[in-house]
Image (cartoon, rainbow, N blue to C red; front, side, top):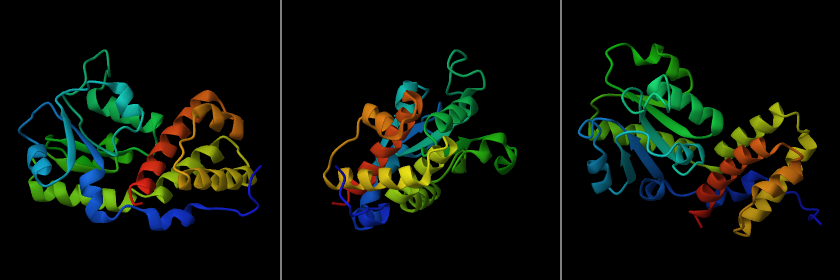
Length: 221
C-alpha cells in the first residue's frame, strides 16, 4: 500500500548534484569523424567524463540514456544502413526514443546552423572546429541547467499527458517514484507498465527517463 503522504520531485531538490561535480560525473559522448576537430582529449584533462566515437558504434546506447550529453556531428558519422540522412537522422531518432536526451549538434558546414532543420530538436549547437573554452561553456551551461530531476520529470509528464494519463495517476506515480528514488531502488519497465497501464514501448521510454532522474538525484547524495 502507498503512504498517505504525497511526495513530489521537489522533495529531492536537495539531492541535485553540485555544478562542480557535474563536470566530473556526467557522461559525455562525442561522435565526430574528425578526431582532431573536437577537443575531447583536453576536456578529459579538465576532468570531464568523455567518450569518443568516430562513427555511430552502438545505436542502442544512444537510445537508452547511457550518456547524459551527446555531442553529435551531423555529417560523416552514420553509414547508410544506419541513417539515410547521416547525423541528422540519428539526432531525430535519439530524440524520438529518448525525448530527455541532451544533444549538442556539431557541424563544420558554412551555412547558418540556427536555420538548419536539426536546430529545432537539438538542445544547442557548436561550429567546427571549436575551442576548449567554447566547448566548456556550452557543456557546463546545458548540464548545469538541465541535468536535474525536475527537467527529466517534466519530459516524463509530457509523454504521459500525450498518452492521456490522468493528472491523478501522474501525481500518484510521482509520489511513488520519489519514494523509490529515496530508497535507492530502480523501477523495472514491467512495473511502470503495470502501474500506469501503458504499452511496453512507452514504459521503456519512461524507464530511460527514470534512470536519468535516479542518476541526477542519486549522485548528489
